[in-house]
Amino acid sequence: MNASPKRVSIPKNGVDYRGKVVLAPMVRSGELPSRLLALKYGADLVWGPETIDKAMIGTTKRINPISSTIDYTRTSSNSSRDPAVAIKENNIYRLHPAQEHGRLIFQIGTSSPLTAVEAAKLVAPHVAGIDVNAGCPKPFSTSGGMGAALLQKPDHLASILSALVTEVGNVYEIGISVKIRLLDTAEKTEALVKKLCRTGITGLTVHCRTTPMRPRERAVRVQLRMIADVCRAEGVACVMNGDVKNRHEALQLMEEFGVDGAMIATAAEANPSSFRTNEEGGLLPWKEVVQEYMKIALDVNNKWGNTKFTLSQLMPGKPDVSKRVANSKGYLEACKALEHQDLLEQAREVDERLGISWTHNIAAVQNAKKNKSARAAGGDTHTERSFNSEDRHPLSERGVSMPTAIAG
Image 1 (cartoon, helix red, strand yellow):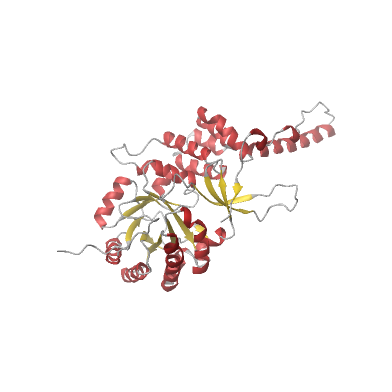
Image 2: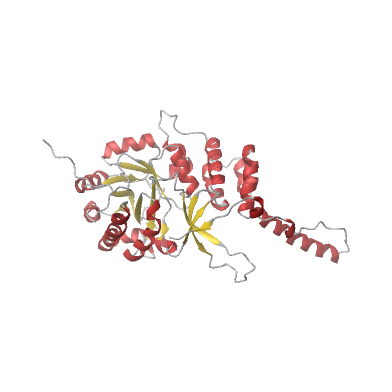
């Protein structure tokens, strides 16, 4: 009788990557609305965008009653010292504890066991796992000893994973995993994977490209079966990444190469309905996807700049509507351009809450003053309509609650 395969045990609050088709960690394209939309369309798990450990350390955790989210914020270093000027808070990381419960993996950028543990502890109670980015090839990551730079220091990378397993995974009962790239030879990759699998991690994702390879170059899968075999022998779930287009293809590749899961990146960035099964109809038209995305972005009061970027990825071929959205200064203008009539009132409220309307009014006042001075110099003295900021009632007086800080 054959013995059952070895498996690293999955912690009580963790999640097994086996049999899962998941959303890849992507800067800008992996923010909360994108993750929630991917889950809506069938993603089994979602990775948040890589967040640097030092950026998380020192943040304030806030419960946001408007969006029902947990926000990790810090005061902007550029905030004015004038006490009369409102202090600007930058949102470093946002998660939805209800809708992402048990399905969110926090990816951390780090080069140190100490700072990795300190940052991971902040978010550990609210996620299903912590994943170390050891694959990003971009200079901003590698220059700090993070990302793909860690592949050149296997012992150091292993020490980071071991520290996270011991001080975070075991304490909060969640899984610790790592995402790597291929090394230049199969022998080097095999040795690296064995070392990492023996740190106590529950999952390993391999991006099937080497560090020098760019996204436009086709993924290389020649080492994939070997990596899957090593992971299986060590009892660690193996997830593949690189040129996976949709759920149907993901399941085929999982069977072909013997991996446990598959990660979709750029295809999901362009159309997150790529997680739908063929039986469900597969890809949806971009207009339907955009409308669903806008609803979610408004519900969580997503930063307009991120929403605008994501919309640009979701609208193919640069039709006239995409140009109008690109020129929009906020949600209301974008919803009008997209003809989302049912979202106009909510868009107006969110714009005001985010300060978009207020910014426009101030700009209008400044322009009016300049025009008035110019007209006075030219002898035009007709009456100007004034704008008095005191005439505007703050949100709090209109029954809108604002986020409050909590300890921890």
